[in-house]
Amino acid sequence: ILGRYIITPEIFKILKGTRKGFGGEVQLTDALNTLSKSQKIMAYDFEGRRYDVGSKKGLFEANVEYALREEKYAEELKEFLKELHDKNYNI
Image (cartoon, rainbow, N blue to C red):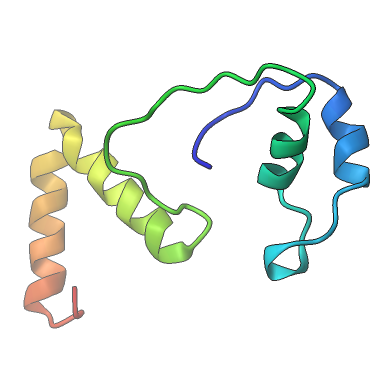
């Protein structure tokens, strides 16, 4: 689940009782599902590109796109990326 959370302290009790899921880790999504049975949970339906910044590739992609959106840096960054590409950095 993409986003930031504002959650009541009850989530900590639920997390302690939540079984490990994917990757052998306790998943917040499982705890949120449990919490939703006793409390109202609200969300915003995000539309747009999402990056998995938990992976190096996703983090790099997000930073490059963010920088390219900034007029102050876009042209210089494009030139830099082109230089790397021309040097066969396999971009």
